Image 1: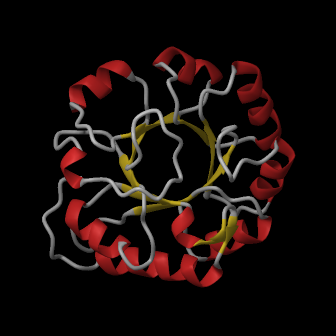
Image 2: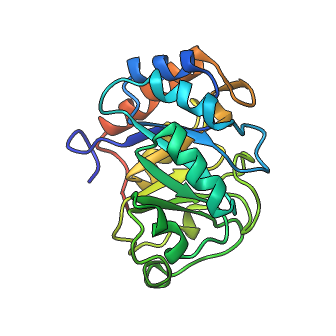
Image 3: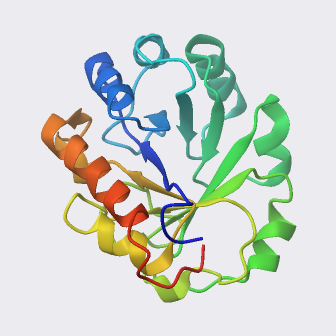
Length: 221
């Protein structure tokens, strides 16, 4: 699926400012993420997430990210921010993730481990896709730890996003190496946690598109 016939999806995560959301849309990003996880430095209140949502262009998805939040917190965030889909990065099981009537992505920290694609499908059979991050299992995302390509299940037949330690200088090589369905970035395009850098945002998108246009590289995604 390498080359110009495949477009890598791009998700900017950890947005806190409507202006950053507007620029992400202008750059052609597919989705932006707002974080409600208590352990995140980029956590936002539902009202702030709603302001980010209001800044989005049509057809750009808002992803609401949770990590072991209770049901009440998830429902309150959904009611105010009206996300397109959900992302769960904690110990949530499939029954919890699908309780809210929206499609969901399951985030997994694969640092130091390898997983079987069949086991992932069995554990989260209704997941729309997976976000594969470089941090250790159970740790919070957004740590900037890169994912070892050997940890990626070669037979994963659902959409998956590569996350962990990506930035404008390395994302092109990462896309060429593993050909993910999508890439997910937070700290690699920031001035500070939750404060995005416009130039780095633009360079990140340009690097992904250049990699998409390059037929070199054997893909597994």
